[in-house]
Length: 283
Image 1 (cartoon, helix red, strand yellow):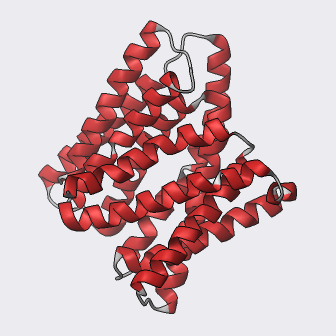
Image 2: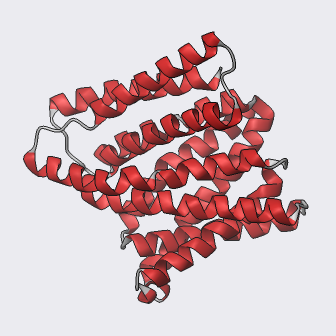
């Protein structure tokens, strides 16, 4: 049963990019829909569990959710420029590398020489994996890749801050869940307003993308319970199946094409990213 709970976020986060791409819409539609769906789950969780948090913890958690939106905007924009099967392994690898380095520098993780050596070896492995998934033989694909990376790389800082801020507060995952979802929804609305896509509030694709937000919220909630039941390391490792699902799904479901060489390097790169993440999870 515990493993089944652990598989929920892996499946949810892996299938979400495919659902978003199938529904379509601009990043504003996808971001707004995701934010609304996430806060709906957050409200339900708050009503059921009724956890209490301090004002400081609430706003830090909300800020964490807001920065998640920054990362998600970059990811959504990259889907249309370089495809899901290229975006997801690169995005995941960048997230893993960044959060690992922040954990070491700011929170004193990987204490001891051996842990640091293994940890930084894992980072190198993940970087190589990301590089392999980015290889493309087609000139048009290279242009799309370059365009997508220009958005994806700088916005990944949003994911890093989203992961780092909760470590600065002493509260359970369930307690910070609702404020994080509130932050996501508010930031999504702010993005729509600032990007002058107010029409997104009335467009059908925005409301269809609420389903993606519901899936994200339920997956995030399942991860909290999985970490409690299986341990953080095991729960985290299992979630890395999501990048395999989304990458292969991009090719099989969305019919994103890769040459035989690109496919071989992508599979090797995915394997290296997963291996690197497993190494960091048990340090």
